[in-house]
Amino acid sequence: MKRFVAMLFAVAVFAVAGPSLAAQPFDKQAFMQAQEAGAPILLHIHAPWCPTCKAQEPIVGMLEKENHALKVFRVDFDGQKDVVKELKVSSQSTLIAFSGKTETSRSTGVTDPAKIRAMVPKAAMMMDKPMEKPMGMDKPMMDKPMMDKKM
Image 1 (cartoon, rainbow, N blue to C red):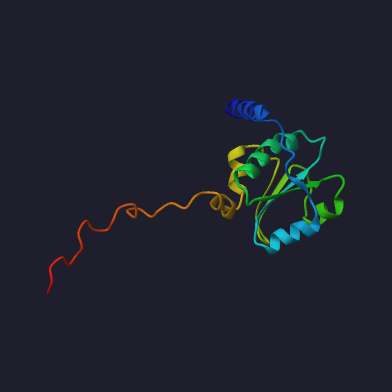
Image 2 (image 1 turned 60 degrees about the horizontal axis):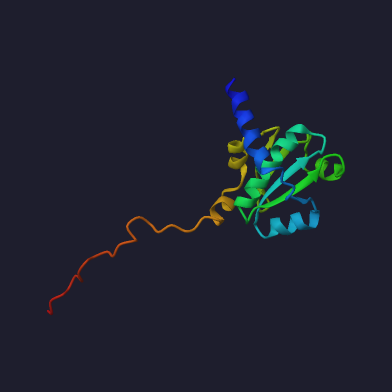
């Protein structure tokens, strides 16, 4: 029952946002350039007839909007069989995260926004957040100079 309610909530929230088709179609050259640049990357192996893929779309789109450094590519499960085979993917609705050339995580059929968010390489999550001052650095270290008397 909890799972049903959570899924219903997620569908309601993301239905308002509408589906995101922002992910660019997979292009091997663009993917390799992103890897060479050390970019955080998320591949969405997608099929237009797949209901799970459709449920993942708004979540992936939201992550892409939140993390401008994140490069998102959509792999067509039916039309890009060579890429699917090279990635060793056996099912649509697979998400693969990379940090540069290193695969950092992979999942199939996941529609929980928190689990998908957890896949995104930490580099992407960090790049869009403003740097915070270390604790205590917002105040001067001392009110008075240490040596206010002449020696």
